[in-house]
Image 1 (tube, rainbow, N blue to C red):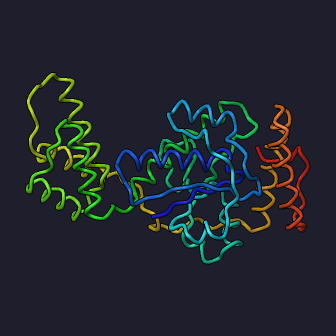
Image 2: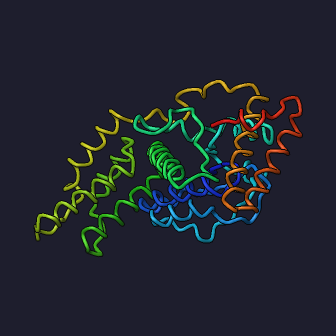
Image 3: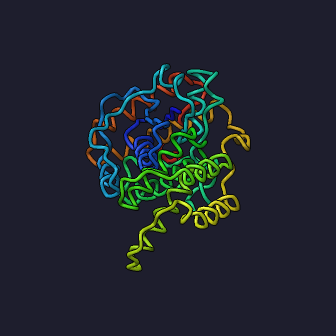
Length: 309
């Protein structure tokens, strides 16, 4: 499965979201998933903005080599799912490749009840603002990506079992493989739709508790984790977020309104970037706002006093 995260400049939200998902994938050894990021702007080869890079480093997300890029027709066509940050991005995808609209969703559709935004809202772009705004957006991205990952389809049975075996061997600290009974148990979990992360987290939690208690006994069978897996799976079923496609996306505003709103946000970000001395980013953002307006001349940009807050 190929997943593409899309934002405006590919210097803040989408690369962070992709890195967060890659961390989840790596933990569970999901070799069946690839994720990447891109932007709607023609802003190539720019690094992550400093504030986003700082937060990524704090969270052990390595984005030091990241450089911005614009989404191409090939990226859009090859992606199995596309997660966007704003409704304007949905319109942009629809204009670039109408057939791809069906595989696009707002990332905020996965926002939890404790998130700073509601499902269907835009994920705020903090470029040009203070570090507190970046932290707010980072928390929103983390919540949404985490919940999105938990709704992804399970990997094929062989990868599912392999990931469980690798984690169990790692925690058990032995090179021994799973027993036939262990493989049968993992297969039953897969057939019942127990998410891989449920099993991995149950194994991790149990071994952490065992190590913390000072219990020297050796764990020999995967069935030792059975009750924990069943309890976590039952809780997941009670509280799960509606999976992708369960509900239709909210109706989008009129196209011109979307373009105008996007242009206002870009101009606002440009003003903030210029005020903080980020002249290159300010120029890119301002040109993007002008480009949107030029293509949608019927919707003039309101004066600065009326821009979005």
